[in-house]
Each structure stands twice: as C-alpha cells, then as structure tokens.
Amino acid sequence: MKVQLKYFASIREAMATSGEVWLTESTTLAALRDELAARDHAGAPAFARGRPVRIAQNQVMCAETAAVQDGAEIAFFPPVTGG
Image (cartoon, rainbow, N blue to C red):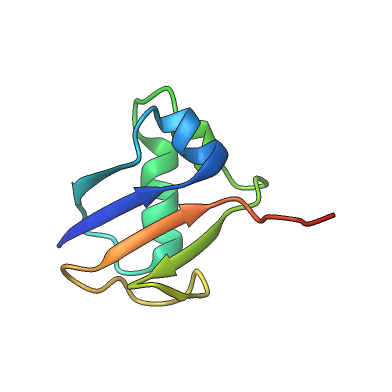
C-alpha cells in the first residue's frame, strides 16, 4: 500500500522532514509504527516502543490496532500538554 506520512513537532525534527510517501505491507498502524522504528534512518528511534506517539489516519485519531488504508494520510505526533 502507498500512504502519505506526516510528522509533527519533535517527530518532525527527528525525521528532518514534515512528511513522505511510504510503501508498506503493514496492515495495522502498530505494524507501520514498528516498521518505521526498524528502518535505517536517524529519526527511527522517534517511533520506538516506550515513546509516546499519537496517530491519526485521514485526520481522525486512531488506536494503533486500526487497519492501514491504502492511499491514507497518516500523521504521527507526540502528545501535547498545555499549561
């Protein structure tokens, strides 16, 4: 499947880009996150388990168990707290 990945805040900084087109065989958002964490890229640790990451698919917040949709926009961002 081909998806459009978007990165925000500290994840964007770690990846050194705001987004990219990605070809994946992952069927869930959790598997996609693990795939991104496993790749040989300086920003990959941003997706490591134990790091807080929120995921939206087509601008809707999703659980990591959600199925990846072909052609989807998938956004990754750290949780944000206010003061």
